Image (cartoon, rainbow, N blue to C red; front, side):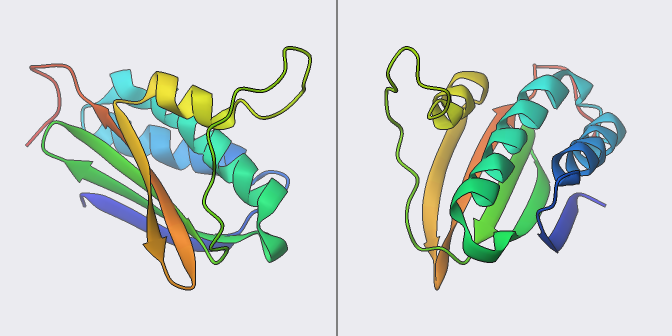
Length: 130
């Protein structure tokens, strides 16, 4: 299996369980070196669902690609996330900066009625099974 899809409502322990799923798939796909980056980025995307999406409903797709992994989080809220530079002492607002820092690519696609926020992490040369 080269993909894993889920449809769920984010709860207080969801991020922990979803990180475990990502970790298992990356290990099975021979891309364990991507685990830290993928888990951190996914945690930030799920936190955005908790903070900004009424009802906290979302979809998740973990997709093995040639040379890496793509993770997509979709939700029914059409508002696009915005990367911003928070004030020094502000507690929040750094999530997308972290996603940008730890992944190779990320973006947002319209997915009416909402959107899909995605990121990709590239495997190092010579890793990953075919």
